[in-house]
Image 1 (cartoon, rainbow, N blue to C red):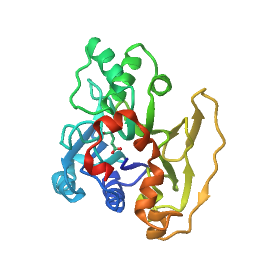
Image 2 (cartoon, helix red, strand yellow):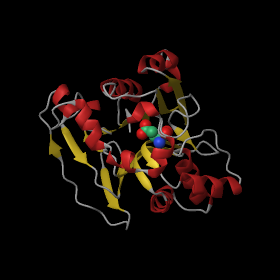
Image 3 (cartoon, rainbow, N blue to C red):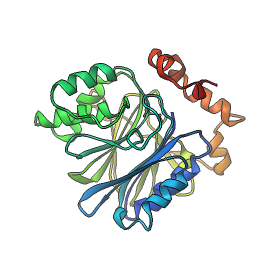
Length: 281
Ligand code: GLU
């Protein structure tokens, strides 16, 4: 389980996303990626290794000028560390882009169901099945939000997801189950992160998303519903922590934090089957 950062607002998204990834570097990861809605499409870049490598690859950021984006540091559970397996992942027409922390336990069934229906997979990850599943509901004529509800009801396992729609740069979507995800509340801008430390320099007001919630985030509004499509109460928590406190939370050190944040990773049978030795040690 590694790092997620998202941004929507008035500022350039890229520096905020890259800054967030850097703040999350204290967690182990093997690759990184970023996607920004820029010049009417979503542009992405993915690299293996440090966030610094990704930074160099985006260069002066000319292809990443825009106010909506998502970024990720990956700790591979399904599929080797590689550019193709790094997040974000997308659907066939490159409309849906998403980053994911956790494990989609029923990805094999989903992948074979979707492959039989003509979806072309570009990675060996569990995550990519989610993007194609959303696409399949969009193809049935559902709107984006309904496609997300239907998708979330079908996926099993653990997830924190940040999702963007190339057809609508006004909304950043987020959903979670058994993996942490917070919305950072700003002024005319909002943030998303797997850990408040990614954005503690940008805001001190956070909404801790709960399991089974789907958030629709715009620059000045946050709507949260449960999977029964009912609005859920929004509680904003003010964190007066400095960066180190934000990184460690209530845990005395980082190792304990990672252990307690990821029990689903340790429990998962798929994980036992495919998890790299590095991650278990
Ligand atoms: N299971 C996903 C993958 O292997 C996400 C890993 C993570 O949480 O970083 O790509």
